[in-house]
Length: 258
Image (cartoon, one colour):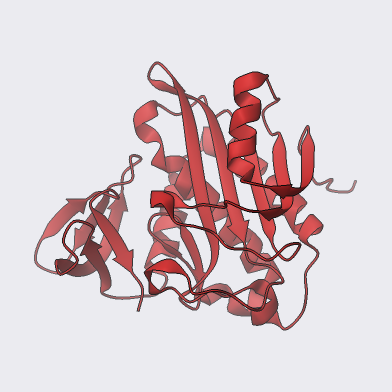
């Protein structure tokens, strides 16, 4: 028996769009799309990341994707668990497609995927709530696939693509179905065993690095370094600097990459 790859119940392809996340959010407001509905585009004019950062992508070169999820097993205060789940999903796909570089794949807290400390993917998750439960989630990502020329990224991160790393082009449609298939698999597994994805996220976050550095968002001169020894489902990270342990939040601190 063949292992048939799962596809989305509905896949909407658009040649040009402002934002795949915004399109799916608008669709959700006007209708009742099935869980798993996916939006993909050749080009998005207003791609964005967390804290309003812009995402620039050449037309037809990369994977721009938003998927509707219904993680009804999570409470509203557990929103960051989905970041961990999506991060692990993308990293698993990259490890399969770039096996020679699997040890260089890591996560920059909270929502960037890196290869050799260069940004290859950004994530943006938007949630809708019903009481204390997460009712709907729009899981968005922009994965650099075949683009080889980039504008400077914010935050000093250097961009990279799968094509630059591997020296060849990839089929973006094939990658789309692989990402969705892996995401569905992981979501189903998370309903039974949530701890496995937190553990994997932590291992990717460390990325073999020692002395991770963090900078205050309010005061750029205020910095700290240490290891991330735990992550809460609300996104707070526990930093151990060798002497003390301190919980920091995504809204107050950002991870630096050097």
